[in-house]
Every structure is written in structure tokens, then in C-alpha cells.
Length: 287
Image (cartoon, rainbow, N blue to C red; front, side, top):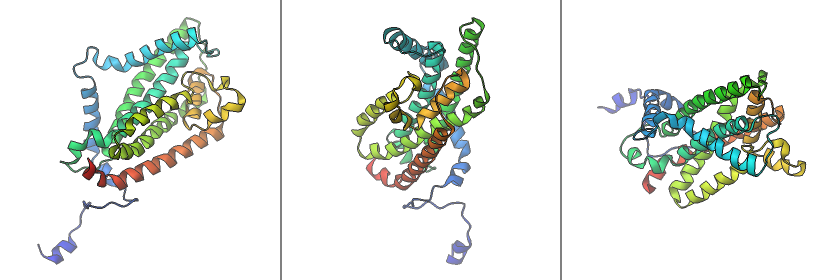
């Protein structure tokens, strides 16, 4: 091929050995949308292969967690959930935290878990964490159906009065904020833990601590005023409180806090994607 022919050739994209901060390649990710769909399907199949209950684990995990929380935090510790039955209160927090935790956990191991695949086949590396987010959002929708059934049971039995309001329209935004935080932090830590494997233990410790400054097992209203600012600084807090208010009628948040949560999420997500994109090729030499 002559130089003139090569110069006139139009390429859809070009694979280089160096990446820039701003070369995110979102159009390239869109071009691999069929791969993304296949990876989402694979995540479901692999997760439930050789299991006793199969996909039912999607429902069993929050159910068992809620039963544990009722026994420990409601019966033994005596944390008040207001007018909301403990089962509903804990289930709402559990499935939302499960979305964040699973998205973060899968995204933070993107390089270490897929090193063999990345070294053999080229495709946009961002496809892997996006596939994980998509799969977790689908699981979340299934668990929301379970929450709806439990709400209907308590409503028909007289133990709960429905308080659905206009904020329920914001639930998709809440899910995106929670998943976005998990993805952003996961992308950041995927780069760090790929270089320093032992830091994964520190990451898991941070996740456990983060759960206790997120209103998963307690309402924000029970936090003393002089300490509440610590919990409110967490961008997940307004999302959890709005989620409960939209479905259960109880939650403490302001529109300003929601805007703060959305803004921090976008900043973290931008930083995570840019760092992931910048380091994705350099990390292959380490792995």
C-alpha cells in the first residue's frame, strides 16, 4: 500500500500504545454495544451456574440480610424506624446499598479479574465495568419488585399506609446516582489495586466503614444535629433518604442536598473514567 493510499484511508478508530486523559472513546464503546449485551448475559449465567437456587439468590440475599437486620438492629439494639415497619425500612436500604456495593466491587477488580482477556483481545476496556453496572441494575429492578410485594402485603394487612408521592418519579435518578458512585469509586480503585494488590484489604475496610455513615440501617433523623453533617457529606445519603421518602413516606433531605449528591457523583465519575482511560494500557505491563 502506497503512502498516498494510506493517507487517504479513513479509519473508524486507531489503536495506539499511548492514551491521553481526554481520549475516552465513548463512540468506540457504542460500536461494541453487542459485546456489552453479551457480557451482561454472561454475568447472569456465570453468577448462577452450579447453584442450588439459581436466580432466586437475587431475592434470597436481601431477604436474609433484612431478617438479620431486624433481629440485631430492631430487636436487640432497638433502632427506631419511625412509622415504617422494620422489614420495609431495612429492605429499602439493603437493596440500594447492594446496588452500590456490587457495582463498586466488580468495577474495582476490572483489571485484576480480566487480565488474561485484556492481554489477548482488544476492545474498549470501559465495556467491562459498564456491563457490570447494567447487570446490577437489572438485578436491582428484580429486587424492587420484591420490595413492591412486601409493601403490598403490609398495606393489605393494615401494618403500613402507602405514601407514594411525586418524588417516586425521581427513583430512576436515585438508582443512577448510587450506581454512578459505585462505578466512579470502582474505576478509581481498579487502577490503585492493580498496582498495589494488598490495598484491596484496605478498600474492603473502607467499604464497611462507609456503610455506617450511610443511612442503610438507621434513618437520618435519629442522628444528633451536631453530628449529622458528617453523614450528610456522604453523597449517598440524600439518595437513600429520597428513595425511602418516595416509597415509604419517611426521609430527611432537601433539594440542595440532592443537587450536591448529583454534582459530587458527576465529578467522581468524570475523574474515575479519565484515570481509568489514562492508565488502562500502562497497567497491562504490570498485570
